[in-house]
Image 1: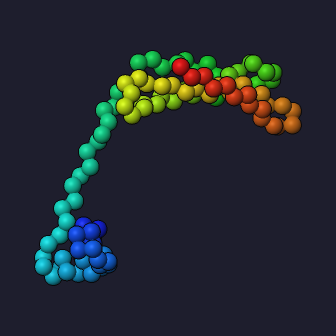
Image 2: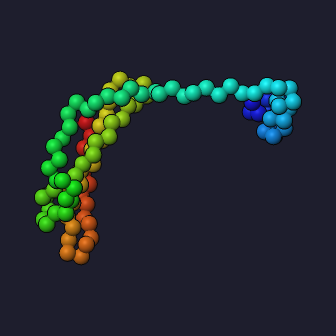
Image 3: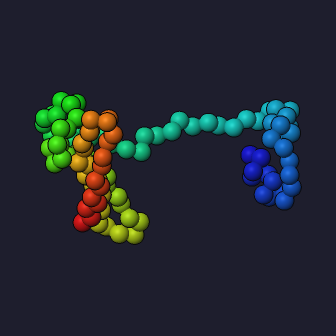
Length: 105
C-alpha cells in the first residue's frame, strides 16, 4: 500500500504513517494464501546406489560422480542439460583432486 500511494502521489510517506491512517479508517490488507506452482511427480528412473556413500577412491578413474542440471531458456522450446563429472581421488595427504568436464548438448 505504501509503494502504491507513494507512486500515485509522488511522495515519500513512511509505512508506519500509512498503517496508522489505515487503522484509523478501519481498512486492512487481504493476505491470500500462496498456491503451489508445481506438480509433484515421481521420477521415471532411479539409479541404483552402487557407491553406498563410499566416495573414497584409491586410483584415478575408479569412481566418477556427476549431477545433471536442466535449464529452460526463455523463448526457446528446447531444454538444455549441464553435467559436471568429477573423477574423485583422495591421496595419502587427504587432498582431493577434481577433473571437471562440462558436457553440453
